[in-house]
Image: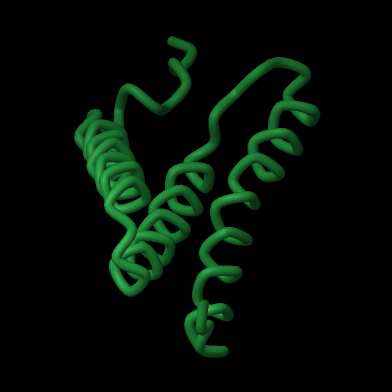
Length: 96
């Protein structure tokens, strides 16, 4: 197989972004002393997924394309659900 250096860089960049989501989630959970999924998790998922999707399309790999393509939909949906929540729901209750 012939690998173009720029596409190898794009592929590895996508994989790095995708892997960083777990590191971000782990660090946040350790700080909170409970399992949490921070907003940054979804942004790293989306960035890594889009980059890996581009790489998969370039490689013409249908398995990889379907896997990353469906993931992108899920990441966007989660971000939409997060931003759709009223801001007031995210604020702590005020003392009367």
